[in-house]
Length: 476
Image (spheres, rainbow, N blue to C red):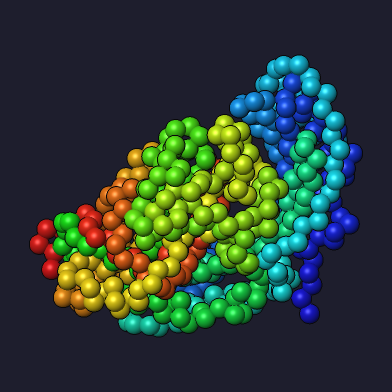
């Protein structure tokens, strides 16, 4: 029987009420108008397998407390990995010295609110033997490595973590939550004539060890190797302006990077986003509806409450091409005079939170993938996307296509490698002229000023009527 040791009892608390209230009072002692305390107690487990053998294994616990203070539009943040009364009061007072003013003598009256977790967990991963986790990895390795003789290397990574948090602030909020996430990464490398190509899949969820028991490991392992094998046998992609079809799931990484970050209040409030001041305006094709939703049960980027204690929710960012709103945290909400949207996140207690994406996707349309392909005379089909870079202030991006194909006369033809997609987020949004009905999501880690956090990206198949494809001269 698996023990549920990671789940804290509702009667437990990461800090007691009087210590929280005294710490918040100390934080406001020099004139701050808002104070917040964030406590994190996290256990991590990670295993890496290379060549069928365990290369490394890491298990650890991370504990700490972050204290944040506002005065108007200014803020200060301090943290410590100690939680005794003397340290917390001292840390709060030192942070408060950065904000000078008249003590407002605010009365703090905390009431602990019940939090109903939206991500039910069946099996505590911390109660599962490491040998059992390695068996999952070995199965993925064997399937991927034995896919074809050209597969020369397979790396498998296993991750699970349990994060207990507490958030309390001078407005009376006091909430606690437990987050559990699990993920498996499979990377295959195919080699031929001195050249190498790779394929990768990294499924994950806000679930316990049951995620691995329910996962179709063979499918993901075979797909990682199939991509690598297909690309090592492919010719180089031609370049130029052409229609581009981007498939569902992780194809949504382009919207996430080139557009999503520009819809976070982190950049909007500072005027560093191309979407600042454009609510109510047409910024995309009428076929585009884009959503950020951290409340989808058990998804990789989901959470019950954000790192400011606000309930997660579904936020429609773009509705039929019209900009409807941003992802807003408390501090930037003050600056923009807008309500928070349950979008404030951070990697750990070492980072102050700010507005971030959760599960961000373009909503499904009415066309089948077959209809989109059949109506494309010639272009590039990006089946799977790889990594890339973006300038959030301009939306200019450059993304690698992990698996691509040429389309001719409405049919998918030969595979091509080395293709990159180059353009601007605003350009892509306005040139989407077909949207499929096969919405799916993929998992990744998103980095920004508040650290690296789990995030889903997603979309159905879409067609961009014209986009610059970077390739090699003489490709094909």
